[in-house]
Image 1 (cartoon, rainbow, N blue to C red):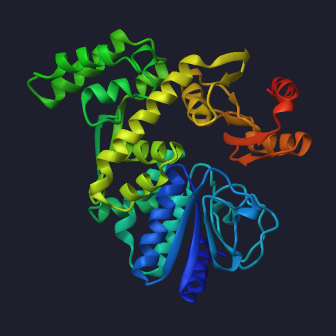
Image 2: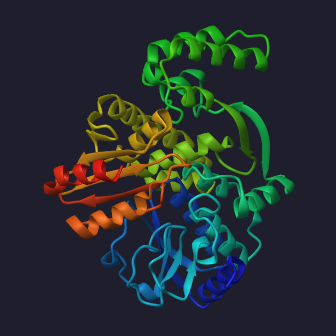
Length: 399
């Protein structure tokens, strides 16, 4: 069955219902997927209730026969057949209403996100091509490539004047100071979190004669003053994407805002922005920037306990710290954070790495208890606190 056929099958099933319950992951891809799907449901006159979750257990789903899982669920093997899954993670669920690139031999880690899958379902429900900008949020949020189905969707969106391609500075923020001081991906080392130096650089760039001169001065000042890694510095400028129909038009900024709101416990704000509510953009930016400052503080405070393993001070920010470290260090990294009842694990690896963190986390969950999974180079889980030393030893042995 092709992706289009899977989308059509799900759309037909959804049309048979007056009401559905949507569960979605709380990161950028999950929130974008939820926005795409629920806007399409609203246009199709299908009522819905929406919930965002950091992870999913089978018991979280109250009524499977009415439930749609976005960016969640593929890793749960024993869901009832009546449930709908829109996901791109490694599939263990065997249900008939499941759209997932991996089921069709397509790389779900790099070539199609949950937002992309939701977009295919949305367009099987009706003409929802105007939602294609949100697929870019899923691509950026999950560090995917613009290839395969991603390339087709975004190429069509460019052709339909929904997305404009350009070149520019890839630092999310409403002002120059904000772009520097709240920089997470790319992480600017000593400049990230430094409001005073960010203000000085912003003042220097204020009276430049042209956009080109502004960009050149900004980048040169950051390079001279920052101790960031080569890879982070090289990521400051490149191909940019203007989302012409969205509340925040810069794709990298849109992704950063939605992702941070979700992880800060305000997925409602991220969803509002994704769904086009212009009245919530300022509140979303403030929430996102506050959370990004937490990420920066956690990255600075992280304690190395092995060559590839760090302990973070926050369960909330552990996954983002792992994202920072894998880009800056260009090697497999595992970041742990001690919760009150569990050990949070976030594992990341460069795209060309030979490690399989999805399998490592699955095996660890089976060995120690808890839950784990994800993608080959982007995985995570929750393990018992008591297994910390044994888990670190197993990571060292694996790597």
